[in-house]
Image (cartoon, rainbow, N blue to C red; front, side):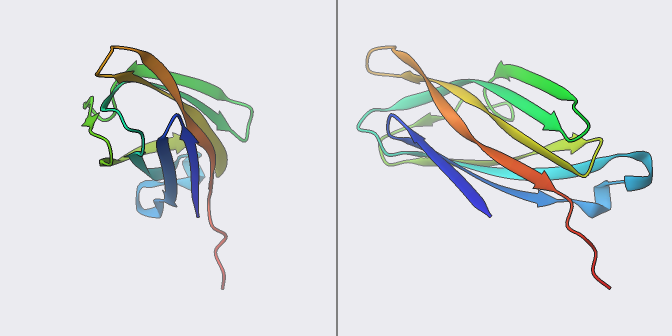
Length: 129
């Protein structure tokens, strides 16, 4: 399932996937990957400067992650361009959610603005016999 949100012409879409081969439920270690697609549908060239994540685990653990760029990059997107990357998250329970913001800069005038990252859930699929 994909979720998307558009802020000032910048569309952020997220798809998640549970990674059973990297998870160890007996040790309360659940790994998920998420693929982010950022589409610049505005008329301006923008650069992604920072990210700010809120990660909620079902057992009421909340973490915040903040830092420069995404996976070591601060991509510049011309009007009409797309940037995609994959990252991961580990949870102590088999269910959680994430959401956040990217800080973007409009190259033309240096104006910064926040782009919403839509809330998405991470749920371990139930095994069927």
